[in-house]
Amino acid sequence: MAVLWTFGLLVINFIIPCVIGTESTAETGNNLIDFWIVRLAYNLLGYATVFVPGAIIINYLRKIKYNETGGHGFLQDFLRNVAFGKDQSLPLTQDDGSGRRREGEDSSLQRGLTLLFCVAGLQGSYLTWGVLQEKIMTSEYGLTGESHGEYFKNSQFLVFINRILAFIIGSIVLCIKSQPVHTTPLYKYSFSSFSNIMSSWCQYEALKFVSFPTQVMAKASKVIPVMLMGKVVSHKKYDYHEYVTAVLISVGVSLFLLTSGDVTRHKGSVTTASGVILLMGYMAFDSFTSNWQGELFKRYKVSPIQMMTGVNLFSCLLTGVSLIEQGGFFDSIAFMTRHPDFIFHAIVLSLCSAGGQLFIFYTIAQFGPVTFTIIMTIRQGLAILLSCVIYGHPVTVIGMMGILIVFLALFLRIYANQRKRALQQKSRQPNDESKV
Image 1 (cartoon, rainbow, N blue to C red):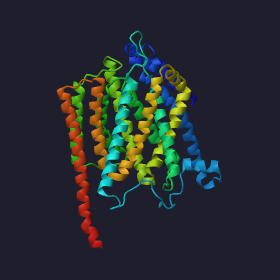
Image 2 (image 1 turned 90 degrees about the horizontal axis):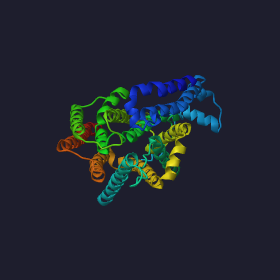
Image 3 (image 1 turned 180 degrees about the vertical axis):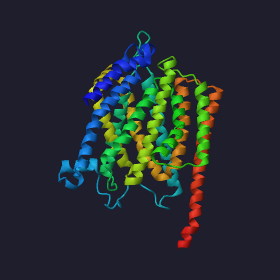
Image 4 (image 1 turned 90 degrees about the vertical axis):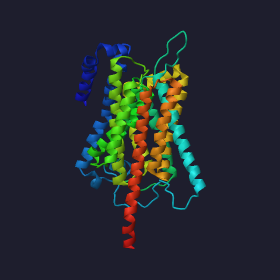
């Protein structure tokens, strides 16, 4: 651990200044600690103080075969669940918490009202979340005609408050609603937790360098890294229409990015480089998160609420430890005392983030992933429109064409996937009838 810290300090104090140069340092007001590369290095060192001891303990427990030799009691059971999980031979016949609808259970009117509720919940949560996200990361708090304001700088603190509220809500749902037997080793949630933290951090940090519409377009194009990550993690194979839509998305995003005029906190060539790197980091980490969680769903039959709670548990642990080591809590609380309106924005942001997660799980359980994807795709278009109206982001005609190409490709992808599923179900019906 000492060697790790020594190497980290060497990178922060000597190597990074050489890489970013004097121009980047001046961009951050000669305060190197606020530059994103340095902040990232400090964050990773903080996460290492959790991961390294945890890996040592888990390897030791596996080496001594603690799953077979460990005694009974709270501590023993906790260590066993962290390293090994529960016996997978246990029956998984309890309610899975998904709330799946039985055929004919709801009337058309009830289904329509439920769908309207899901659309309103998802759109309201995430459109509000997007507006507040841009407000917090790009606006100067305390700005008056006589004095300059100050920006909120600690993106990790926003990740922490979002995750701790989601963990609390998930824990409450687990207590009041029955779930399947949990067999997943707890430590396996830490991988998707880390990637989820990093994707959220990159997302917040990128808003210092690119506009919100640009970030949304990057999110829309994440289907490309998701496909690449799917090949690496799950060895998935994709149809031709998926490659065609991926190319269309990349073309549309390129048209938008080449013609957009971002108005951001930082100016100059470093802005473009930093923004692109952070958006690439967001897409890479977010792609790993969805693929890893998909593997856990498939292997351990974990329920969505269990996944939500487990991932957010490790997210709170990692970000909390890192913030304590960096003094981030004190800095953020001091910022709150100077700017009370930030408290309101942060609370609403966290409520929208946690509530949005519940709406995601509920919508998928009631109507399936296709309907959910359509709702969220529409949300991306509305988010760009809302951001342009509120914050005055300029969009050229070519940029609008790029946006239309991206969303046309997304809807084409949804249609093709739905048609493929329908054909597969139709082809299986004769076989099922012949068995009868």
